[in-house]
Structure formats: C-alpha cells, structure tokens
Amino acid sequence: MRNFPGNLSLVTLMTLGATLVLQTAAWGAPAPRGQGTPHHATVKPGAAMAFSHVLNAPARVGDVGTAVVTVSEDYDSGSLRLTARAGEGLELVSSENLATLAMAGTGKHVVNIRFRALSEGVHYLNLIGEASDSTGQNSSRAFSMRVQIGKATTKAANPALAKDGKGGSIILMPATETIRN
Image 1: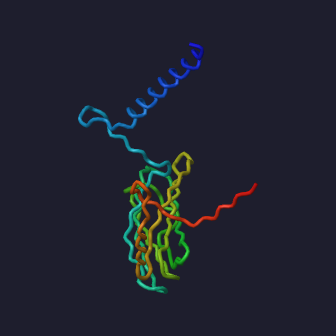
Image 2: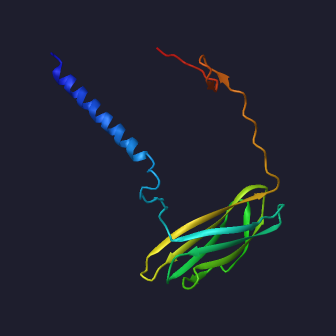
Image 3: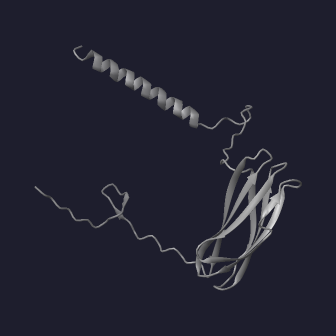
C-alpha cells in the first residue's frame, strides 16, 4: 500500500479511458434503420448551388472544346456571378452567358464555356459561382472539370514488394547511417 496514490490514479485513468472508448464507439456506430432515427448528411459550407456538366473535350492540342454547365441554385432573389478560369494547359476561347445573372425563376442556368487545349495531359477547367442574396450576403462555390487531352497514360505497375520476417510487405529504401562521437 506504499504506492496507494499512484494505484488510485492508475485505476481512475483506466476507468476514464474505458469510458472514452465506449463513448467513441457509440458515437461512430450507425443508427439502426427503421427506428425513427433521421438520416444525417454533412454539406460543405458555401453557396446553395450545385453544378453538373457535359464535356466535349478536344482530342488534340490546338482543338477547341466546349463545356455545357448547368448551375442549379436555391435562391428566391439576388444575383449570381459566374467566372470561368482555365487551368494550366488550357485557354479560354469564350464564355457565353458568364456574367451576373438574376436568381429568380426556375433556379437553373445553363452556360457554355469554350476552351482550347495548349498541351497534352490532364488539365482542369474551373467555374466559380458567387451568390449575392437580397440581404447582401455573399457566398460562393467552386466547381472543377477534368479535361484529358491526348491519350491517357497508363500507371506503372507496382513493383514487387519485399517481405519482412512475418510475411508482411515492406518497401526497402537505400540509407546511409553516420555515427558521430
């Protein structure tokens, strides 16, 4: 019993740890279906809008492609400002309908973005939507479209991995060890 305070704190620490593990497991457990528990989805903060697109990508460098983008917004009033940006390897040719649009009516806006391929590879065409509601609050959302120019490159096959003493895969890397006294 000489070390009673140490043993008591160890028991207390173990009890708190077990409680934390059980509580964390309960939080991460899925709720049983059919028992009135509502489904919960997490949405990123930003403007209340969604993007979808149809991409007619150019096949070769120098060709012009078109992205037809549909922007769906959930606002009763205000304005929507759309801005297109071409990533490295692409160049904007024209951006029809990209301006400030009124957010009243159907809630869907279709815009055409024409772009030219400057080099082969994977590039991105970006669209930024900034909504200004009737109270003057601004919020934005960004959307990127992947554009493949030329033939897709194949990934190199994974090299055979070495095995450790227990049969687990390991990666051997060269190293130099220097010991100084």
